[in-house]
Amino acid sequence: MLIEEKLTGKIIQAAIEVHKALGPGLLESVYDKCLSKEFDIIKLIYNNQVELPIVYKGIKVDAGYRIDKIIEDKVIIELKAVEHLLPVHKAQLLTYMKLTGIHVGLLINFNVPVLKDGIKRMVL
Image (tube, rainbow, N blue to C red):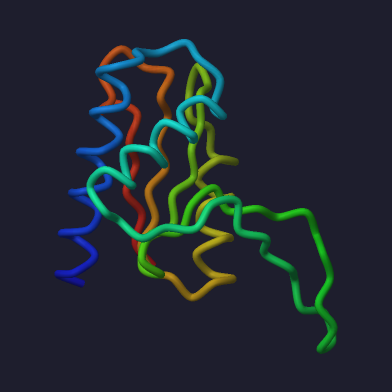
């Protein structure tokens, strides 16, 4: 778990850099693209918009799930730009974590004055 803690620290720092530069109030897609650029700068390996099919009776079914980012196959990031994080947002991240077997996730809401107030770290 030590690797994941170090990794989440780097991810949070990158998100803070993006938030400092842009502030709150933009679309989630803008933060997503800028966070990818920041990850490129600090050389984090990531995948964007990862499709997550459901397996039903041995058959893969496209249920429309898309994970915003998976960092180094160890941390899932779910991005938001909403007034308040809701229980459904946390449930969404937990679902992605359970379905992928990735035990650490970050829910990041950029629509806050201070980013640390918009970050929720979750561990299975």
